[in-house]
Every structure is written in structure tokens, then in C-alpha cells.
Length: 408
Image (spheres, rainbow, N blue to C red):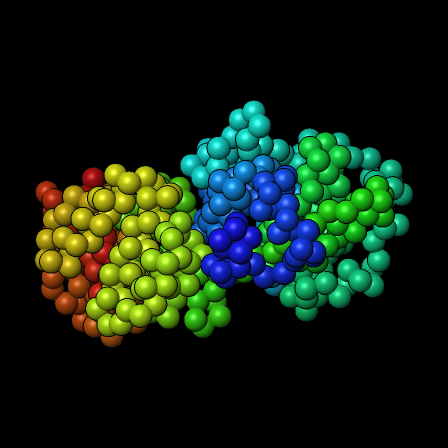
């Protein structure tokens, strides 16, 4: 199976401008392609994960990736799929986030001469002369077409700012610049970026009279149609300091039965033949498939040693070994105790097992919380600091979410 056919078989391809030409370039290793990453946080998250895996697959097939970090576009913010405007970041925040991205991407793709390239669009966007830009680029964009674009739909309901309206022009200009600077002939991205990507191919055609191509990858959605990569504590990050390897492993270990095979195909590098065999698995075998998924992805992001620790920690907990050293630990400081005590609702929030006190209250009242094996039913239950001394205590929400609480 060639590279492009494998992408299709794994369910990764959503839309493509010219399938015959794109498949030829990809299969022959002649694609110089880019994927953009706006630095909206100091870490990449699961939402970026599939794009990184795609870059890795294509590089393995001989193609040259360009990882474009948005030091320029990040100053505007992508309105795609959002109902509100992104918070504005300082240049210092944006530049710091870009540096963090570079370190994390190196786990997936190989940078260097003749290999992958890291580029920052701040190099050409931040110093643009606005009047010259609008005169040069503006005539090639139809406002009527832009207003029909999918990426603006959610924002139109609450009001689309002119700042955000410029984003499509900026992204199209990125492709135009990369085409000229690095002979970049393709852009890949999430399916919600299709309109922005077509803006780039059209700008190149109008300005240079040449062809460039775009392909979108399927968004990672669960069986309910919701984006994957969110927990009660927020996003699932690739930075181990923001989402521990154990919690990263647990996230994938807990995916729904209907989603595990899809995730194995789209995100892992296991042979399709092996995954197709799992398609016949049922019942307890599905748990084995989830364990394989969690182990493979944790290895990709955090390395094999951390994946082994996460697996051992999970197995120890399910076997009753509450004191496993590989379970994520949260240290409690003096500030966590009000008048010498910390209540169960505050502890659930501190541990990242509940997003709010009201959610924590529901969890306790429904009998889904235990402390060191003892089921919690009273929302007023509180603990003194000495309770968490020594090896700490295991706080559990539901069947699969654990955090060890330890007094610092």
C-alpha cells in the first residue's frame, strides 16, 4: 500500500484539492508541505497530535515537512470553530510559546538540513506595511466568499471583529510566502481550516500563475461528534508538566468502545492488518485494545520508559495497589487548608478531578468518590494536613481517575 492509500485507509483524509496530483507528489516523496501551529498556549495538546503524526508519516515516506509556528498570526487569533474572540497575548508570551512548540515537535519529526524545517511567520507578518499589504493582497479576496466560509460561521452569530476577519488573508499570505521561499507546494491541516487553505492556493494561482495544493485531515471526534482531547481539568497536553504521562495514558485507556479502533487507525503506527484483526474483538478484548492504544500513544509522546511506568501504575491501582509510585501525585500546601482543614470538594478540584465545586458536589452525592478506599457520601467531609502525611492518600473519582494527595 502506498503512502496516500494508507492515509485514506486510516480515515485521515477529509478533503483534497486535486487528489490525483496530491497522491502522486506524496507517494513519490516530492511534497514540500506545511502545517501551521498558532502558539495559543505554552504546550501543544491532543488537538495538534494528529497533525504531528501526519507530518511524521509523510516524512517517513520521503516528503519534506515545514512546521510553521504562528508568531504573526498568533497576534490575531484563528476564529475557526469559536464562538468568542481569543484573548490577546503579548509578543513575549507568543515567542515563548513558539519555543516550547519547537522542543515538543522534535519528538515527532526530524529537523535538519534536507529534513524538516521550522519556520515562524513572524518573520514576514510582523513587519508588513498595512497599506502595501491591502493594495497587493486585498484585491484577490472576495468579501462575499469570505463571509460564506465555514471558519467564520460560529463567530458571525456573536459578531466577527475586523481583526479576526483578517485571519484568512494572513493564512493565505503564509502559503504564498512559503511557496516562494521554500518551494512549498502543499498545505495540510484540520478540516475546519479548509476555507483558509483554499485562500492560499487561490492567492498563489492569482499572483504567481502556479498550482499549489491543500488537503485536510479528519477532525478527531468521538462517537458523539465531540472533539476528543478534553477532560474535566481541561485540555490533554503533550507537556508532561501539564498532563502527566500517567494521566495521558489514562485518557486513552478510557476512550469509548466505539472510538478505540478509529483512534488506533488514525493515531498509531501499528500495521493496518493488526488493527483490522482487532476489529473482531469484543468484550474484555476491547480493554486490551484500549491498553494497546494508550501504551502506543504514551510511547510516542513521552517515550517507552514513561509508557511502561504509566501502564504499571494503572495495573497496580486496578489490582488494589494504591501506593504505586507511578500514580500522579498532587502536593498540598498550607494554603490548601482553611482553618487547618481541606474539604472533599476543594480536594477534588485541587486534584483536577472536578472542574468546579458544583461538579465535585454532584460526584460525591452520586457516590462516585472515594478517599483511600473509603466511599465519600458527605460533601462536608474535611481532612487535616496530617491525614496526608507519609505516602499520602489516594483520591478516586469514578472507576478510572486517580490522584495521590500528599502533604508537602
